[in-house]
Amino acid sequence: MKTVNIGTHPVGDGHPCFIIAEAGCNHNQRLDLAKQLVDMAVAANADAIKFQTYEAEEIYSRKTPMMTHFKALMNAPDNATMFDLSRATELPYDLQPLVVEYCRRRGITFFSTVSGQKGIDFLEKLGVPVYKVASFEMTHFPLLRQVGRTRKPVILSTGMANLGDIEKAINAVVQGGSDQIILLHCVSNYPAKPESCNLRAIQTLKTTFGCPVGFSDHTSGIEVTKIAIAIGANMVEKHITVDQSLPGPDHYFSLTPDQLIALVQAAREIETVLGSPTKFCTADEEEMKRIGRRSLCAARDIGKGERVTEAMIAVKRPGTGIPTELMDVVIGAAAVRDIEADEPLSWEMFVQYESDSPTRKGMDS
Image 1 (cartoon, rainbow, N blue to C red):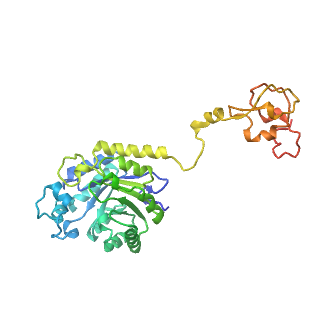
Image 2: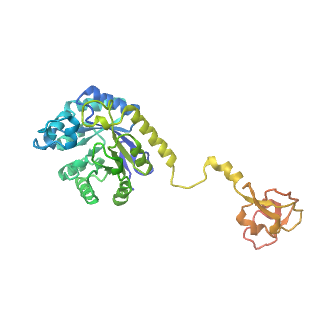
Image 3: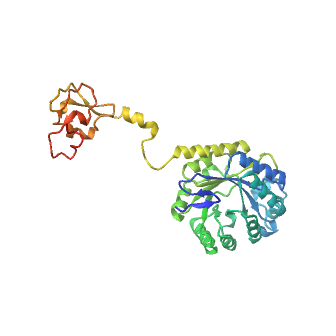
């Protein structure tokens, strides 16, 4: 699998899961609230905080009806539109440089979801290290090519998509000029039901496209995110809020400060537990291995000069004696000293008379 670098953070198998605190529109168009979200991400040791750079005018027709879910949530009138909702939740362009500078001072990576060339040009001037493209834009091929032209890493959310959709989106980014692509498995519901998450698709995307794959999680809480990390998500993204009761479409299912802290801690614990794909005896197991495994011991007292028979050998703990698979080599050897019953056998106790034995080394007197 290819590794993609976001600043100094490598993303891919064998590297820590990259954790994104998704501020989204939970700033409520207030600089002070945006800064509180940054502080929240920093306090939790998230790897990055993500905002959204768009204007309602460039993403929605004024005649786009408001989705039923949002209409009920916002208690909106029947004639409400998605344009209205977007206009009320966009982060003003004049505030974004201030947020970027605050992130720099606080030592956390800032980046943003883009929806058009204006946003890309704007964020290029701010020096963002990576771009995010939302699931809704997966078929916006001009945008995908425009993002690719930055030659920076591109994170593609894949909600509502099948493998064919994803392949076309990747090709558009590559045509633009970037092959540094991270896919995010996603279910585009707010909140998403845990039973709809289909987390096994994460591995399918890795196998199919050979790039890092993460999970943009819209479920409530952190349990599904933890499972995604445990099965190999290279990146996770969760909405955050300082208060779930604030007005807005995303606050109520977003993570609180305590939940974000718990998620980051859980992610690092999961990575520690998962460890390495290499199977080996750990340092903590060495004493168990030495004492708890079996080896060859004297079944009775063996006198100096006696030839060893199978009846003279017992297979017992500890494991510090001659390995059990070499019993046939020991049989027929002569003891060079008296050996007490239950004494673990070692090569220096014997002389081997089978001169053509391939395991004679260490047994000569």
